[in-house]
Length: 133
Image (cartoon, rainbow, N blue to C red; front, side, top):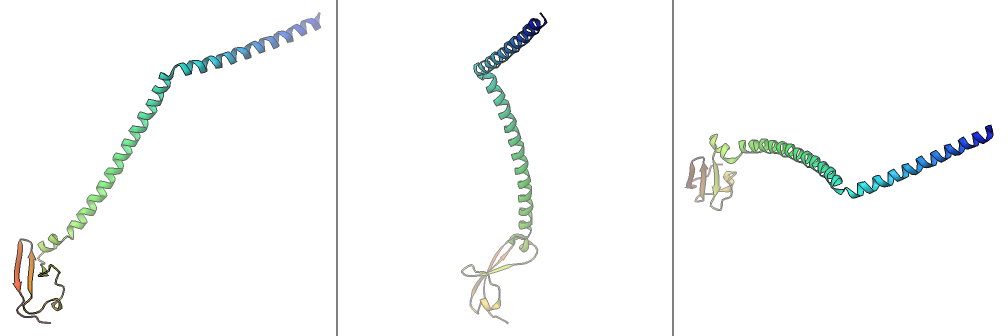
């Protein structure tokens, strides 16, 4: 009887294990079917991920552009400080010949050459009377 009972117990355990395995497989199959039938939930999850990524991209882009704008403003300010009008405002002038070429030396002009002197508030047209080296 003990052998029969032990054999029946093993058989029952195998039967229960098989039944539980079958139930687990059916549950997995039904879960897959349910997920497949609920694309709306999947879409909502993906939309939340997309919104998070868009928000992150927007914030990163804003920080990047702000940083670049600050760099640009610094460079613009430095360039402006050495620009021709700033130099003229410090008391310097710019002299050009009749073709607009900058006169850098007395060797660039001779007697009778028409020149233009640029000042902060206007220009002066002149004719070279004499050149001293």
